Every structure is written in structure tokens, then in C-alpha cells.
Length: 295
Image 1 (cartoon, rainbow, N blue to C red):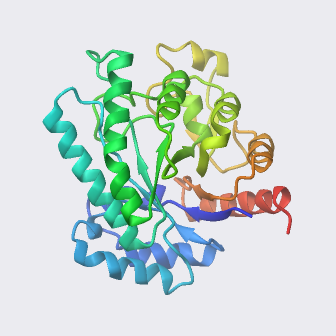
Image 2 (cartoon, rainbow, N blue to C red; image 1 turned 180 degrees about the vertical axis):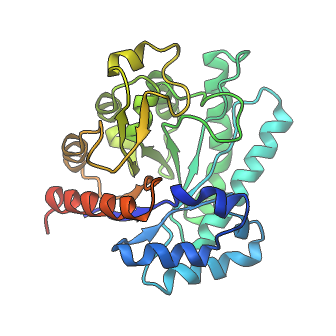
């Protein structure tokens, strides 16, 4: 059966910007939820010093949990070679961070969809950059996972590989045992794509998953798809919500993943309205995992 983790979506500013929450406090909040692990983010303030990595791992493991995934946002689509080299070195350091935290998975992204970048040029630059990180991943025993993502908070442009066709082309270019897909069904809506169609296309490459949900505030999904270039950002038509009460068809998602033998980590990326919402989402996803992966 897949194992269940959670990401501190509601506390990113406190953990990564103003330092008003410690990692220990996050662990104490999340430990009673009945999870197997906690996904961490490379930009957490306490992780800036490598000397803190062993302590951060102990804090989680002391509560009977593990850190399975490290969420990172490299920008590999920049046309300047020196910039890309610096991003590759950042990702290599994050791979080492992941290993020190005990994480078997470390996220990569494609980078920004810069206006001057052609599709072919972008695919080549991103694939080369990810491939340059794979020897370090192999050395550390870490698998790189690329997410069908929207946009890092600090980027000027959306994800280069946001749209399904570009994302699938990129995934197809990299064939390595230490590379796979982190599937996020909600992000497909933000791209104006069908999350089940995307899953069907990449299902054999999925090794981890982000679980979240979105609800429509106004209009229809067709309205969303007609927006220029897909829905950029967390579109005004969409809102985060409790998992199981939104647009995603988790029966279809988990049925598809079960059908290809998926047994990786599912990390809840929700709970933006507080711990009660996160707790309800944990109950829903845990029940679905038991339904589709019975003992």
C-alpha cells in the first residue's frame, strides 16, 4: 500500500519567510494526524545550514515518521549557461540535503516559460540540466521527481513544462532509473488540461504523488480551459479545499495508479484553511488508499 505524507502548505510563510514557526512545531502539529511521513521544502529557514539537517531528521523520526520527499524548485530553462550551472549546483546540494534528511525523493522542475525560449530550445536545456544532476542523485541514492507544476512563488513566469504536451515530451526525453514523475492532479486543472488524461500518459513513470483538491468558484471547466494559456496561477475560478470535495476524481486516479503497480508516497498538499481541513483530508486519502490497496 502507498504511504501517506503531508506538506505544510498552510505554514510556508512561517517556516520559509518570517521564521515564526519552527520545524519542531510543525512536526508536533502533524504527528497526531496518522501520517507515515512529512514532506519538506528546501527553502525552510532552518535547513539553510547543513549542520541542522541531522537534527531536522531526528525531530521527525523521533515521532515515528520519516521525511520521504524534499520539494525543490530549480530553474533549468534560463538561456545563460552560467545561470544554469548555478541552478544545477543548487539542485545537487538539495539532493545531498534530501539524503541527509533520509528522503528517497527530491523534486526538480523545468524552470520558467520565458517568452524568448522556443519549445525545442527549452526542452533541450531542461533535459540537459536534469541529466547533469542524475549522477549526484545516483551517488546519494535519491530519485529525482519532476512535477507537472504551475509556478514557483518567486518566479516571474509560469513553469516551462506546465502544459501536458510539453511535460510529457520532457519526461520522455529522460530515461534513467533515478528519474520519475511526481503527479499532481490539481495542477493539471491550472494548466487547462485533464488530470486523468495526463495520468494516462505518464502513469508508468509516476513514483510519487501530490494529493490536493480544487473547487470551482465561478464558471465551468470549459471556461477555465479557454483562458489564455491555461489558468495562470491559482486562478480566481479555483480554490483550494478539502480533498474529496473538489474536482478531482480520486477513484479514477487511484484505480489507474493501482493498475500499474504504484506503491510510492502520496503527499497531501492541502490544509490551507487550517489543521481541521488537513485532518479531514488525511482521513479521506487514507480511506481511499485502503480501498484501492486492501491488505
